[in-house]
Image (tube, rainbow, N blue to C red; front, top):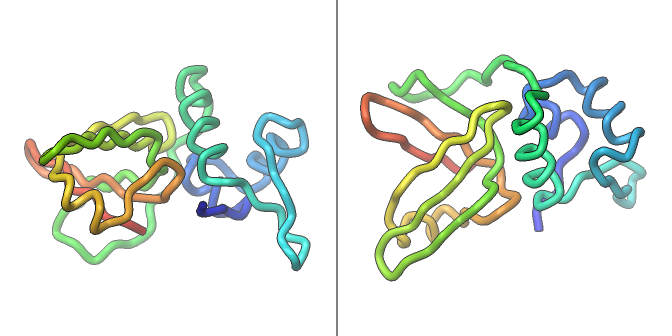
Length: 134
């Protein structure tokens, strides 16, 4: 299971690291420490918290990282649900206050290693949504 630092979680939630740290201090999201003492948030916990935060109108519109792609509408976030069929799959990403749902092939989901708690970026161009694994 992937874990995220407070800074990484803040970027995915669209808030400052100080805000993410205050939420962790208040017990709004569970953390644990790694061997070097850094506070980490499990991916599944961060996914659940991001959904809760979006429902209550929390989060913010943070700045995106520069990407090398022709697709300009990028939504970095965390995978909150994956539904696999025999051939197709549905992937939900919570990107700050935005919930994005994409239909793609099962093979693509497996190749990208998409699962709940994994960081991913939804890219929207016209009527297509492209998902990149971060």
